[in-house]
Length: 452
Image (tube, rainbow, N blue to C red; front, side, top):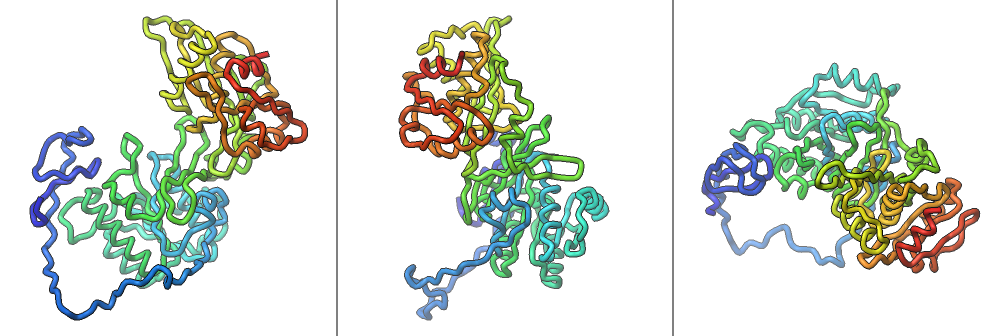
């Protein structure tokens, strides 16, 4: 495709086509292509004059330790890697109504020693004022509000006011008058993000971009935005639960394994300091189909309750439903239980749920999921004082997991008496006070240890 040729870009996935088509061949969405005018070709004159931008050897580059700006919201600082890096561009995505604007307003109000310019393109300043009053914060003088979508006018305000932090809510509502496409289109979102990126890097101002997500859960707009920004944050949560999880999908200044857990209340988002106690608060011991597992999210151990319900199927094809764990992983565990343990589940409906609305993708919860299914099928309760940890292989072996000491310490801190571990992991862990470490090699041994 020639550089000067007109091209058509899908607003849903960013696919580029040389001509307009009704259905996108990449994402199968209809009527999403918009015309993007070609950029004027620039003639580059080559001469013998050396460039002022000479390459610098890597050994001669001086390292600069820039102090981070802490928001006083511990869960947010944890996900960011210790605070906000000056000059960084951050993208926050999430479902509608999940609490993105609430989180950004709480962060703005928490930065009491920083001047924050909060630009809203979807709400009026009065609506933002009502939200700030609901959050019960005393000092709001350092937060400046601006209801505007013209990015050129916003940059003029930034030049005159010189804020310390800039929040754009949301990037899909911003537009540049020089582009013919409508706000929210691929070209508008991309050019607006590029302009804000230059602003962040040249002036050293942290810029937060709030982004919408598509029905598939991806951040709306071209994928190139996620490559441009320094940090991509995803705000997740089930509609029927009050808990919210903040994840870092990309972070150039820290780890992407950390998560922040919040509870949505009438007065805003509250940090969950000890998530294990919260997620186990409504657990009733002695009920079949319930097992406590020790998961690791980043550097934090979390104890969760995995529930399972196995019942006779009333239809020709048994149902397999999972909430909080991967469906394909559930199918694998069912096959292992039937082949290695002798559970006949081919005519049974199986439902698995992680209580509290948290999603866990770690293989170390395999043993807990399998124990809950076997417990419900046999109608025998799992030992309420036991915690199950281990990855299950296709041969029925219990494989080693990482961060064993953290899991054991968390279980001991909450008063559990036994923890079932893979034998290879149990060899390297130090015994903890008040908790017995039970090593197992195979899934049938684990079932005997858990189902009493």
